[in-house]
Image (tube, rainbow, N blue to C red; front, side, top):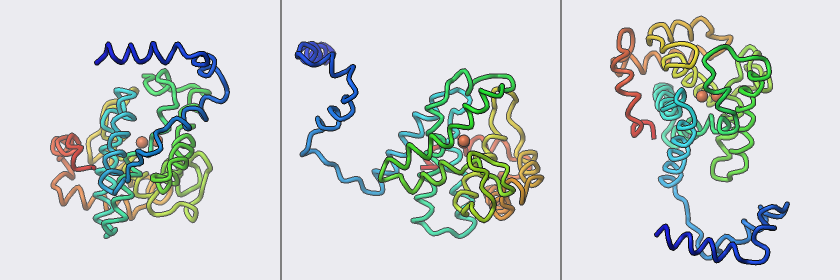
Length: 251
Ligand SMILES: [Fe+2]
Ligand SMILES: [Fe+2]
């Protein structure tokens, strides 16, 4: 198999314009034009769920500190949404958006993502850019363009002190509030380069401290209820890690 791939590559590379095309401004147009026209695949909802889950694995593999993050954010997002009575089809879109919310981190250097200490000013600017990258990437993929809003706004805060736009509460839809609550809860309860994972109770207490300023109390309450329902509240950290390690529940 590998030998035939090498053979095919050698044949293609001997074409007169091969190397000059690789180095030219028209490369993207050439690649798009060479897509086989008769091989369109209709993507149904199950297929789109699988694609989102696959991309989440790529995103999470970028750094040891984001391992499993997208899967867990999707899981917590779904728990919150279910508790709030969101219907099945909206929950499905929310889960996909949660799986893809940090896709922009693929555009941020590992020297920033994995830095064990405090980020410098320029490094912090680089880190913050991932939200705008997520929005841009997702807005260019028709099937996931619904997720672009969430990708771009998941670090906004109700008091306007978030990024990248500094939106205020009235400009932040409920679906963004749900994913951003799930996102911070996972960030707090997972190991980070600069601190170890926090217990569930402490993470919830921190979320409550910022309720109404950072995150929506309705979402925090729904998360707390969902965790309690799954017997994960209070001292249930071991159970939480067991649940979090089952990505199939998040997909
Ligand atoms: Fe993020
Ligand atoms: Fe995130």
